[in-house]
Amino acid sequence: MPLAAGHRLVDGPPPVEDYLRLRRDCGLSPKTADQATAAIAGSWTFRHVLDAEGDVVGMGRVVGDGGWYFLIADMAVLPAHQGRGIGSAVLDALLDHIRACAPAGAYVTLTADPPGTRLYESRGFTDVAPDRTGMHHVMPSEADR
Image 1 (cartoon, rainbow, N blue to C red):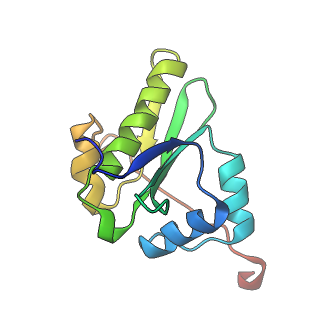
Image 2 (image 1 turned 180 degrees about the vertical axis):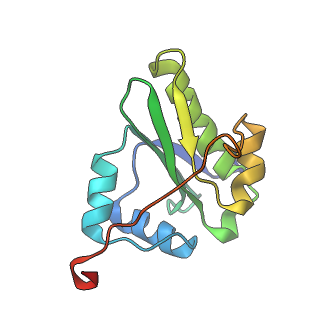
């Protein structure tokens, strides 16, 4: 699905403020400006989408080693802009970049929120269960220790 008229896919990260706003407004866990700055700097590749007014309305990035392991992260589209091909365009651009730059056999992974499952499955992603178990661990802050 092509992007809706007036929307433009941009190669690279959005500004830190927009990264933080998209995460917040899309229901992803909030992050600090320092975390956002590090996430942007540590990304292997990044894409974002601007609407006709030049506002950032979607984004996604890849974290990886450039050799065989790639994690798709921070896929987010503002609710008012969903259903316009933004998530598809971002995901396709990220996957195209991996195909073009990574060696054969690259392992691409992600953690999907239920609303995104259909999109990811349409691009060939499959659930790792029951052969594997997805896990996570959030490091406690100093205040939690």
